[in-house]
Length: 268
Image (tube, rainbow, N blue to C red; front, top):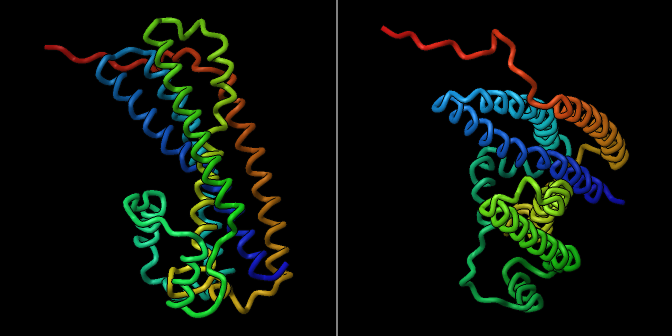
């Protein structure tokens, strides 16, 4: 494998791993805030116990997610210095906007065949193959769409059971819901593969090819060694996070200690 292939593999590995934690952090933060608000407004101790239970899981997830995100920042300078020199001053906000635009394309646009698109790109940017890996595009799109539909149907099934007051006794649904926890991660990963592979061979559309964005001062061997190092580091972090979250989850919400009870309001 070339330096370019290894650099892309490394960034794909770290990005996918990092974004396993991002949606969990967003979801747990919202859930914890809602539970805290429910306890504050209603005073029910059960909500306070749930707030502390999910809040601890949130802290563990954030701690691991932050570390994996920092590695990505170092990679811009280590593996992609050419890209950083080109757009380093402005790529923060524009990249966020680009990501949103990539996931929400203009559905009213004209649909063209790959050969026609490639011909237009050749006229605009010079001779070459401007078609991304069709296999990845084909299956990433379908995995994302099909699993998202499955998750929606599962949610509607749960809502139907809830309205009929049968949710807590529906063993088929509860067992299925436990295994369905992996669906958002697969959907998220497929979406990233679809987006990032779809921009190839560009790293900055129309301005810089991916092959021109890699660092010329880093050798192929150095990139390969760093991939192994990051893989071992991430594997260790995954084990630590899994142990901590599993241990905390098995403890359950637990009873509140006497000092944890909310203080009574003063009356006059």
